[in-house]
Amino acid sequence: MSSPASSLEQKQRVLEKFARIEAYHELQNLMGRTIVAINFRQPERVLEAFALDAPDVSFEYADEGRFVGAEAVRALVDQLIGAPAQPGEMRDYQLTTPIIEVAADGRSARGVWWMPGAGAIHEGEGDPAAIWDWATIAVDFTRAGEEWKILRLHWFRFITCHYEKGWVEDTSLINRPNTPMHPLSRPTTYHNPYSPLSIRDGIPAAPRPYDSADGSDWMLSRDKEA
Amino acid sequence: MLTIDDLAEFSADELDALEARLDRQIAVWEVSNLRGQAAIFHDDAHIGEPRRELQAVGHPSVDVDALTAFRMKPVVDSLEGNTLIHPLATPIIEVDEDARRARGVWWSFGVEALSKFRETPMAIISLGMVPGTHIKMDGEWRILAGAWQRTTKNEYHAGWVHSMEPTNTRPPLTPEQDRNFLGKFAYRKDAVRRAVPEPPRTDT
Image (cartoon, rainbow over all chains, first blue to last red; front, side, top):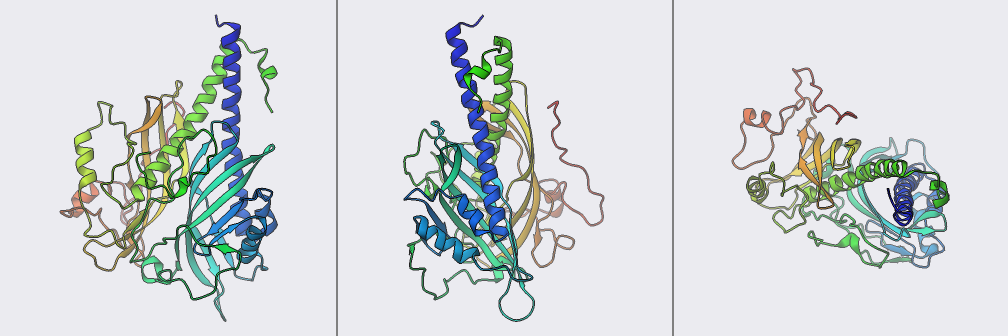
């Protein structure tokens, strides 16, 4: 027969476990909705997912740089998907391999997804070009009231290549095109897409259980023993 | 939102049963995380770096010496241009009543690039499955058994009907050895596909 004190303790523990399971499900849905909104060119829905009230909200995209603050995040989303969709255009990213950790205090979370992607883009006259466009997504989440929001998203590009050539023959990612950076972007923290000349890293790292948000740069950790 | 008042009428047995169900759901999550970490470690080309153990090395059924020897074998001259990434999709995970053991199967659409002797890499489409058993040891889930099961490993342009690359080993495997290793249930254009692995059932 359990004592009233142990029963209360168990009830609190059960509530915490419920909250963690719900968080896991909510985070998966949040990221699913966000990627679908990117696929469908719905910038406002993408922005709804971000904690735009937080001064350190950020979105780092491949080698386009790190966009910090609401104005910069809006600018990047507008640059990526703000233009109207064109006939024949397609982007089809799919989230897989979820690795998610909710902080012990339940106020923040970290997640990584591997994201195969296929697409069709216009490069001039004629038919659109079929492409592969794969990435890994790493995210810091924050609990804003009753909702989860993206505080920091880093889009680690893995493959972008023409379908016909494949990732070995299409070497267009070896050098960044000589185009100016967006004026609101800050220097890229990590960019290492596949090329025949690259050596792979296990980055972003898998998040590990943690107590509370501490600002650590877990995404770029090379400590495989942690 | 559920509050402690909602649990007021639960008897001790009912509360135990509820917590056990929750623990099984959390186990599904933790096993998913474990396999995701294993996939990242697998993709990481820095072979031989010290890393946190994900296998159930304390379990008597795990041959640690063989595992270590397999990990330390060099299979390419240079890591440059090599990659393999096997995303985990279609998870089917069953956890036992005590949330101590779990079986799972994932399907994967993978891509690779292979350069054995610093030649121009070969782009490869690598479909397959990850069947596995898992066990909780010292509060943490570990992989007890189960690794990659190949469906295709084809040169990108040739396609999976006309190309099947063997697993890269030194010395290289003969086709017969390869078919008895990771290629045992791989696609063959002259064979009916076998239903292997079957997804785990609820009576796992």
